[in-house]
Amino acid sequence: MGDAAISVLMVEDDPGDAVLMRALLQDQDVPGGETPRFEISRVDRVEAAVPALEHGRFDVVLLDLCLPDGRGLDVVRKIKAAAGDLPIVVMGAGDDEPLAVQTLREGAQDYLMKRRVDGSLARRVLLNAIRRKRGEERAREWEECPRGGTGGKDWSGRRELSRLDGQ
Image (cartoon, rainbow, N blue to C red; front, top):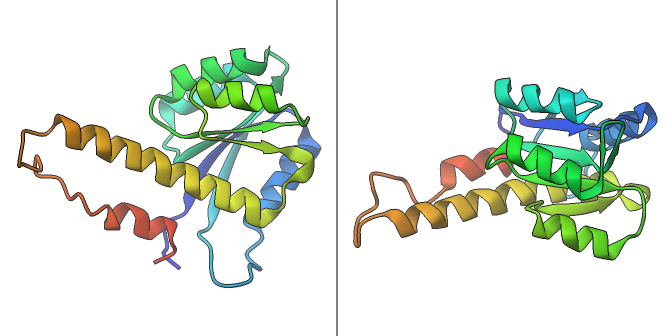
């Protein structure tokens, strides 16, 4: 496994849910191979997440939908505005499929139901969200390049994704 960790900003106000999610992500007893290490920074409100996103360097945001200073799609919109191009994975307490679909339309990469998640699923969802977001960025950059050129970029993506794959 590589030395670089995946940096997660967890926006979660419930201490019990935060401890559980941290334990799930840091569980390295994964069948079938190694997984990257996750470094988790936690804030409990949108008003604390915004400056953390402005001043921190994160790979992904793990966002609860029910916070003391916002709920639902409003929270997603505020964090999306502050996070820029960072992938956002939303955590919801209920099995509300219409809300999950709406969060994806608002720019979230994925949706996890808190009561149905395990460590393997949480890690896979976060890593895939990062991969998808980086793929979208590369595709957008490719479209902006002059025909036939690469703009000096390494389009293989190997260096970026090797950290995610534990190489």
